[in-house]
Length: 102
Image (cartoon, rainbow, N blue to C red; front, side, top):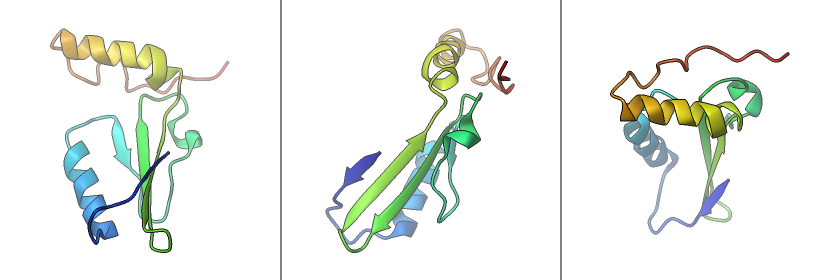
């Protein structure tokens, strides 16, 4: 979770557009729909990072929240992801299957 105080009169549409443009070409980053925060349930066993945000008018703060599966995205999946990039392989190679719990 990240808390930020914007310097300007930031609107939620500005934040959404920025995040969509920033992560448009990142296969494993998903922006949550309006009004829904990320949940580990939706990233469990995947290499995805889900991002949600809220602009709190009362405190004038931007709240960004992300969720990952710390085993897949946080350790082994990140290593495979980096190897793919370093070796010129497709970014998603070996990372599109959902890991199953025993």
